[in-house]
Length: 286
View: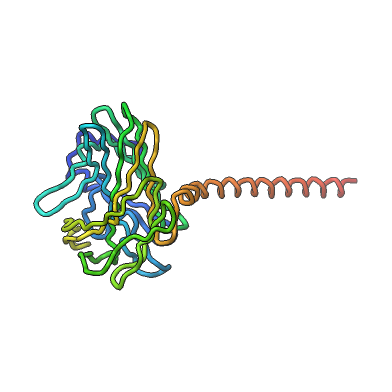
């Protein structure tokens, strides 16, 4: 689907249209065009911890923002009882959806940002990518991941168990399992500030006859920060398994490499078969 101009659409229109990515392991990534989760089964990484097991919502959503002198721009969009905040939909200019990756364009006075989401086919790993496509000077970009860590149809609430990210390498982190939540992993090519907090009472409207609504508390392990120059990108990765950003980006391009290899192998087999037929024909010639 080509990029669609969204400037004339209302938030209700943007939040009624959903997108979804799936992989071969039973995981998916899904939300609305406004990036506002309206159902408890929405999430950026919803995956089983083992093949055939029930799906769990690992990464529910992410809150992104851009900053420059005298300018702070929130790009997220979330509904709470009685209000919607932030209103990132006001900066949303276009959306494109295909089988490989949904993509968004946000823009304002003198700046624009491209966003895309990829779900790896053979790993329960989601990649969030952002590129500052226009700006007069470098801008600060931040992302706050919000985790649910619960079954797909349930709701999460703040509990007294200890949740804290463990540093694995310079940019890679692990969220240990608790008696109520699964283990999770995340990585980025930015700078992580591990100041965790809870976001209370995210509202899901649900879908009549399909899925109940409700209120949910989401946990954030901290804030990831980048300084982006024009045409520079930022990446955040979340997975059910140990992961690093570099390897995840390499895996993103692996299917294309496998396809090329397969095509070359087919060509070799075809050429070999043609050679064998030609040789047999010469041997059988009078």
